[in-house]
Length: 386
Image (cartoon, rainbow, N blue to C red):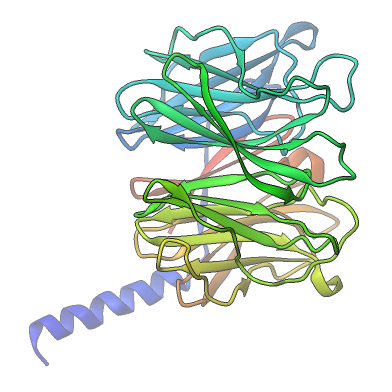
């Protein structure tokens, strides 16, 4: 056997060996305070993990904060906004991005005091990550209805795109998938409707592929089928939305349990929850063409699934998926690797607790590390080592 062949075989064996192992969960001290929730991640242009969260202080006051992980230590936590009416639902995750060029951008959802229906998208920007612009409402409509479930991505030129849902006729009627572009000064400069009939209260997810933006969301039709769709922005225009896979989940309610996408170049992974056929499960599907087509999904969970999935792509093209499920009389945060050809690796339990206290766990892949954050009363973080 030639040397090159021996090396290839050895690498393949090592890859299979690593794939067949459970993750080692390495707890990492979090910069979040003792009372904290709604953790979210992003990656800085330098490749460092950025963790954001809402921190509860005296008299139940709330602040949006963030810190960056440099090597083995967190930076000093910075406060973006405080004393705001943050909507503290686990699905309404604020987000902080460090954009290419040095601008920072943050978004969150506020629910005015005394209102059960009104939700509004707010945004703030910073040139240095320390001094932030006054919070500004990003949605044009000011009526007391839902404007939320947002996700955000760097649009280039110091701008960010915020994807969000607008339900002007209440939760029992179709919502719209919206996009707002915000400039480096924190001002909304463009708003457009991408889909006029989507599931009302399931979060959005947006990633950047080698071809452009891809948004994953839960769709809706007149028969109350609520499958997962993607819509792509390529060559300066939005393409028609596409069903990722026809689960045909018919439900006369919004499950508040949507899809999460990850992308590296033209490789895309999407994980989501469905209860079609009365079989609650978390599924994952892959695309090798920037989301134009997807393969048949793989069932990820092994026990009774609650959903609330998250996913990232590893450097080898496999996806790491996390989700919540029931087990041992409690809720559990679980994770496993799924190869691009649909082979699922061993399952790892990351954490255990009540379903509500676990919040909506979120994964991040930065450099060679995979991180996870969870917690709806105290944010916790860990590294998933191979």
